[in-house]
Image 1 (tube, rainbow, N blue to C red):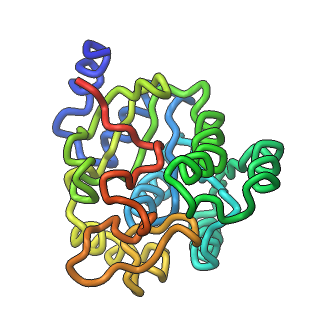
Image 2 (cartoon, rainbow, N blue to C red; image 1 turned 180 degrees about the vertical axis):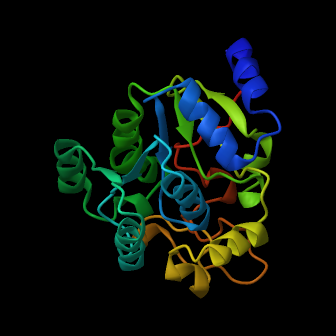
Image 3 (cartoon, rainbow, N blue to C red; image 1 turned 90 degrees about the vertical axis):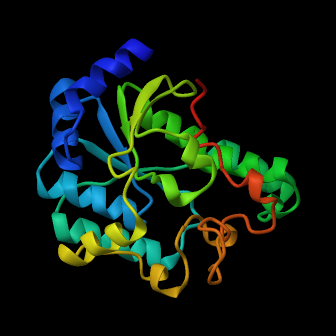
Length: 236
């Protein structure tokens, strides 16, 4: 897929995030999709898409274990922009089987159990959401974790067989916050309480000063295992 990536790169080279998103929507009409979990970065990109009326579908994964504050910013975002945010839920049969056999907190017991839970609540719904699309937009930034330093702003996702584009990949957290403030964008109030990365409520805690950005995600596990599988690092 290197030639396809090079072709896309030539079209968006030197463009700012909004211009690049606009160009991708033109090149792949009806085949560009953006996933939001309502964190700072995703709220920035949602604003770019909604305020410019870009024809890019916005969706979220409703795992059933989100924070109350996440639901609040979800509602506030829809009220602000008057645009749909498509919700994808876990397959109820898979979820019911897992919880019936292992209980509601099996993810604490082993990495394998946690990955099973992520697989049912996030990976399977994600595949349904991405089906039929060519470009997946995300809010990934390079400084969010060590693993993400190995990624690029434009890459081929072998697992989902499509191109991923991270429009604010090189932005710092201070730049993200400044953009949110400049445009008065709704954001998750948990960010003000020490939550830089926000996922499911049972699997996310606040981080202390000096801790890694993602230390609050699956905090009971080894640092090297702290990815759920949504964003695999592209292989050269």
